[in-house]
Length: 275
Ligand code: SF4
Ligand code: SF4
Image (cartoon, rainbow, N blue to C red; front, side):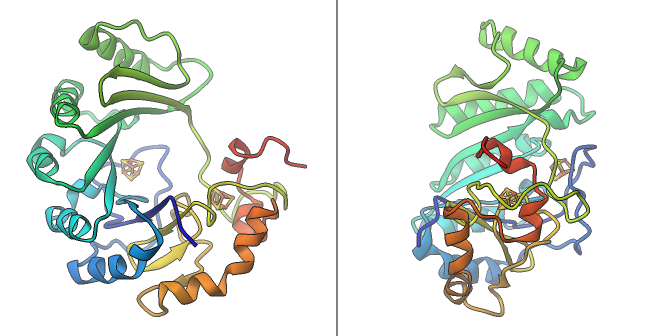
């Protein structure tokens, strides 16, 4: 079994409090270097790409530079997702990493920080000119564009001398640098209504996630650990995979056996034929 990507939540702490966040109720924690090394040793036979994010702000982690170096030594490519508030402070660590392949910058956080957009785009330009893919995200769009999204788009249009007319999918701003759009999604939750037992997504077939306490969950949207399949600090990752072989077959056969998945609306993006 191989995953296209495995998410590793190096911290679930964040310096913002976005209205659209899943706001985890799990204890707040920073992953230790030993825990990260343990995870890498266990998962590296199963993927080439790790994404250092589920919830939380990965640039807050004091050992980020060490984690990037460990990933490089283990021949793993790294993607990061960040709210960009610490981008200027951590930019040199990112520029010196030989493992970092892409950074997604969630502009839709709209923090009240002076010159946020200017500083973010300045750092983004440096990173992309260095060969690191930069993807700016506006992922909380409603049917009509809100004021902050409009201002952001206008700023990017002026900076990149572009007329951005398509508000869906992705627009290339310059080499290695993109702006991606999406509508706000609903984080899956056991408190939501039942949707269907049929459908599929990338979960457990192409990706899985490891939360900061070592819990293995089927996808990066299980931000509150409501579909934990095991804990790789207690059970080897390989054993967790073997134990849940039937779950993989279920996803392949468009059958949703996990209660959380039966209440998830996000996976409708992947399967328009839900009945
Ligand atoms: S930046 Fe991300 S993790 Fe932080 S509050 Fe916003 S949505 Fe949540
Ligand atoms: S159905 Fe939803 S909760 Fe379940 S793995 Fe897919 S995206 Fe995640």
